[in-house]
Length: 357
Length: 269
Image (cartoon, rainbow over all chains, first blue to last red; front, side, top):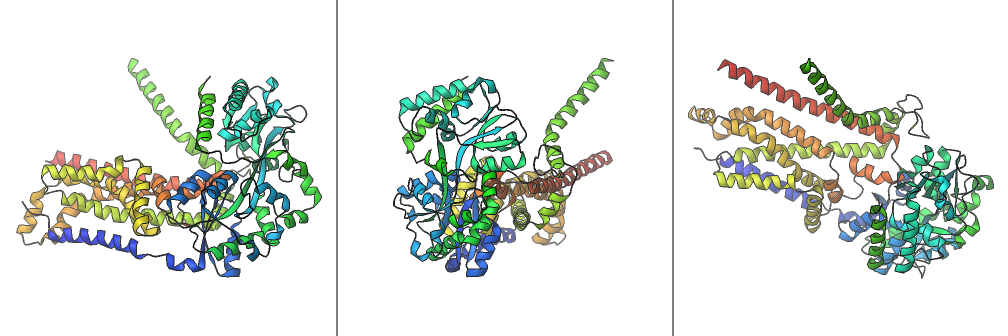
């Protein structure tokens, strides 16, 4: 028997060694001075803006996307990548600030920060109490999207979701906190309640509703409503606006009892390598022409007052999902981070709803 | 008569299975030509618009480029390494052989997400995530596929031919190159193609080991999913489906050919 030729052992070792070295050799860190790493929801910015920013400032933008706040948090916490800017939803930012993962933003260095309307700073206070850590990006509400040809009148109350007339014609959100919004509000509770008794009561209401519900969906809600698969659906305002664009019979309403308002904001996380670059980018996003361009692309409600002032009244009246009445915000509440125990309780109740019956 | 019924039943069964398998894909392909922008469930006429937009979309094309480069590079490296593993095992004792086989199969049996996370933890300790880390990660999890398809060929090897070459004055390297490699070439090729398709559609491992700002198709689609999938993605998926179909077709043609050859040579003997 022949031994395996030595040559080949050597080649194998060489190849492995080469691979190891090449992976160590690459060092991106040196470039940190002149680049920022931005982490945002998928498809949530006009990419041309990134190019324009690079052209104007010479700072390169490494742009990374995520699907859910939880996925973002996992990736961020692992510290694999040092992000300079993260855009995320209210409750996740709340969590990050509480865990001291956010750095104070030097607003005085931002020329255009004044464009953000006072109303939205106030709304942001529910997660950024000291107004130190965030810059509002886009916001919206949760409400009812309905088909005007299938529903009599306007379903102006959450109670309409319990109307037996619409049996098998109602779509609910397939996510824990969102689906508890209607029963909690109808019961006069806060949507951030951690009181087990109130939550149990809400669960009973949801169980009663279950026989009327056609399905619990997340991403398909919009498509199903556009395709006239159901009469009513609980939905986010941004999605609702898109849906009404595709199907003219659809309309959106925030029920009179109130609802959830959400806000996506930017934070500079601890460990950011290019703090000044990040602030520059935030300032750039607030600049009227840029914010306007970005708003046209994303088409969610913008907190940028100077952009809002430039939009004519007609457009505002046409799309009530994106441009709600002033008073809508007053009756809405923001989600806050409830802590692990309460989250577990919510999950437990939610499972009970999904499994039973 | 009964036989006839049985035959038709068999055929109907086969057709149903094939339909179930391919209707979703057919739907996707058809949707990629749908001109109706407002409502994807309604047919609005035939158009190549999605494909035209796809070619102009820098982000999507960038992701496609990364995917192909990654799959091509990783499967090339994995094929070389995997083949060397198989050749190296020829002269091993049974115990160490089965040990090596076991070790190489771990990434195959391990769930992708575990492989991905563990690689990520390793990489972040020693290097920044970059294209190279993605490449190494992909090589790691596709090597077993190469080993699996090369190993049977190596087992069929007639080592006497190799020894004969040595007796005739060939060096080890030359004999290996001229005798062993050509013998096991079909296995190497199908291993390469299999590794390529595995790398092409991987999500979990890529997701955890990718550098910021670098996207493959699967990670890009995942991120864009939040706002609904664009028709462009249908077009892209159609193209990928055709590539994979083509690759599979080649694999099958090759193995069929090899089978026939063996049959023929068997008859000749």
